[in-house]
Image 1 (cartoon, rainbow, N blue to C red):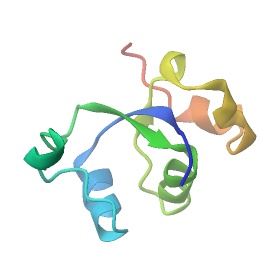
Image 2 (cartoon, rainbow, N blue to C red):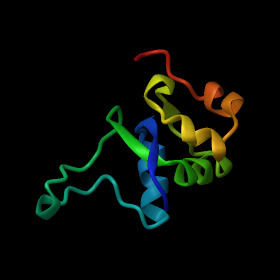
Image 3 (cartoon, rainbow, N blue to C red):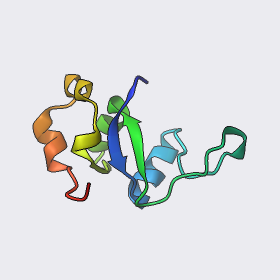
Length: 88
């Protein structure tokens, strides 16, 4: 699904949504040293996954300063700015 270029702040709604789409980020996976994510955690998402969540009305907030510029090839800056969190 591409590079993980969008730094997002996890929400309960997004974690539930992405799990239903086959990308379970909330369940710990000790075999991969992955503790599972909870609301408030920051995680880098693929721009296409974030776009899919945005189109479904489930996009989490983003930390613009920590997003990769190449994300703009998939998402307009004005959209990302609408979802920008003020806490860095």
